[in-house]
Every structure is written in structure tokens, then in C-alpha cells.
Length: 452
Image (cartoon, helix red, strand yellow):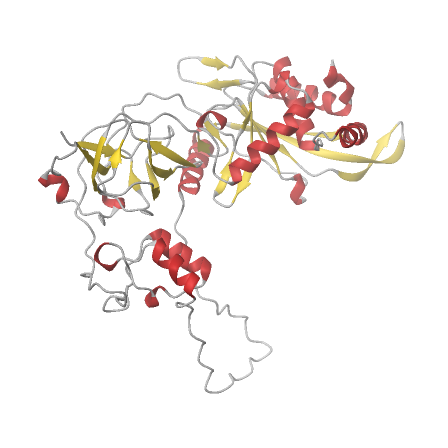
């Protein structure tokens, strides 16, 4: 009996994804637990394992297709010797993923935050889904010299092939497509790059030099305007940030922290770490530790709002914003109040590295009760962050800088850092938010107290 393989819901907020890669081809024998494809979600690229056994009868959604709706049919599995059903056979592999009919996932998953985004979740159970008719393509002419160009200048290529070609600086019109109906796929681009056969030709020299621009004439940008499609992460970031700003009543509170004692403690810690070959500790690692202890002292901040009740988290799990080339990701330091600075530093180095590579596991970015966003490393002195639903608070960390301050009636120079807390006023009122920030300030200004 034929089984439809559906686009899984790999996070609570995922409505569509990108089919990044197929690890199998039509006719391959499939076993339970076998990795069959890779899906790019709103957080990472994840491997999808087969649940059932059989033979890959039909690949419906091609490799590199973007905008594949959750629960859309991406492939059909049949028993050995069984013919692919007529309905499945009518769905060509080049069907446009963006037009696949969506279905609501049956998986029940808890909400999980990130900076403007949701977190990962479980896969939706299989269900039967139809796929819309494919986008018309040129007939495949066969042979190695066929072109991907259509009359009128249109080039038929997968989104992944277009992206790789743009990065490599090759001309898709000069590449012969080996995909369905002559479609250019990534493998074609890779071959062309290796062979050096698809480099764009030299631009024709202008017939004559342009006339000089008058000194009073406005500057005109002459570069080509391009349209960059949104990836999964940026779509979710945009939606979640908009929802947060529109539906969560934000209150902003700022404190200035004197960092000189903390910097001295960090220097001593790292000097010891260098001798023992241990990892060094950053200011951000110390902010994570201090925030975790402050949350332990003020458990009502480590909370979320629901229409029926206040949710108080039983552990101190801190999400930390990490910038990647695909958008913001917030891996989680679990039980941060119970970990030493060395362990927090090691965890953050590992999590941040794998976040940038898109290799985080679901439980490494799903959940968290509080978020830290640090732009101080970019020279930003003070800013206000948008709350990461369903969390009730996010801490914006500015740059440490020398400022003239008054101490004992005298003007002195101290290294100061501004911290701004954004709080959901339904959960954290002004007094509670101020108390939390004062506790956090105390830990940072007296770092020895973090060892108690």
C-alpha cells in the first residue's frame, strides 16, 4: 500500500520549509530510521528519518524547493514490486513546492521563544495531502548541450541552483540542465564551476565616456536592484517580532553598571584558564551567570503570561541571541544558575558555533524563560530589545565604555555598561523589573558574590 511522505512540522511556528537535500532517489529501498532528506526550518537544517519501510516510488518535491507547506506530500513510498498509484504518478517531481496544499499539523507542541521567533518541535503525524499542478517548464531536449533558457529569457533552475550560481558568479544560461524537463539543479552548477565553462563573458566597453556630472547634480545609485527572497528564519522573525510588539505591553527599564571589578575578575579567571588550558570567559558569559542568579532570586521574572494563568518556570534556562547569516537564532544555556562560568563559556562557544552552522538540535533552541541580546560587541551603547514571546523579559546589553562619574563627591573615570530590560507588564510590573535589575547590577559589580 502506497504511503505519502509529508513535509514535517519541525517547530511549533513552522508553516513551511525548504527541502534542502534528498539523500535517496526514486527506486531506492527505504528502511525505518534511514535519513531520507534534509529540511531547512526556521532555526536549522535538520535530517528527516523514514518511519516506514518500502521503496521510494516517487519524489514529488525536488531538492532545493522552497516554501514547501507543512503536511504537503513530498514523496510517495510503495511496497517492493508495487506500482506507484496513478494519482501519485500524476504529480511530477518538478511540482512547485510553494503551491502544495497545506494541512494543519496534529502535533500538540508547547510554545517556545526566540528573539522574534518560535522554537523547534516535533514532527507532525502523516496525513494524506494533494499537491497543486506544477509550474509549466520547457520540454527536456536531452543531450549534454541543452540550455536552461526559455524563450523570452526565462531560466528554469531550482532555487538552490540559482543561489549557488549567484555565489559562484556563473551564468545559468550557459549551463545544461539535467533535472526534470531540463531544469538546472545544484549538481549542474557544481559541474560548471569545476569545469569553468559558465563564467559570464566580459562586459562590452562603452562606446564613449559619459559626460561629466555637474557638481550640483544629485548622486544617483546606478547599481542593479535585486530581490532577495526571505528565508525561513527571517519570515518567522518578522512575524514573531510584529506579534510581540503589537500584543505584548512592553515596559523598558535601564540601569548603568560599573564594570571595573568584573573586568579585573575576568582577567584573573582567564589568566588561570590560560595556565590550565581551559577555555576563556567573556563578559557575556558573566552576564549570563549574573542574570541566571538574579532570576533565581526573582522567580516571578522567570515566567510567561497566558490568558488562564501565570507560568513560572521550574528551571533557569537562558536564551542567548546569536547572529547567523540566515538570521537570529537563540540557543539555550540550560540550568545556567547551577553552572560555573567555565561551563557556561564552553556551552556558549559550542552552541553559538553550531547555531551559525545550522546544526542545533531541537532541544537546544526550544524553550527558555529569559533572553539576553548583546550588541555591545558592535559598539552599541544602549538599545531596547523586543520581548521574545512567550517569555516575559529580555535583557539588552550595551558596550562597556569609560565614562566620567561622581564617586564620593569627586569626578572619576569608570568603565560603565548600560543594561536595558524589556518586560511584559502583564507579568513584570515596574517595581519587580527594577528590583530584578538592581539584583543583577549587584552581582555584576561584586562578581565574588556569584561564587556564593
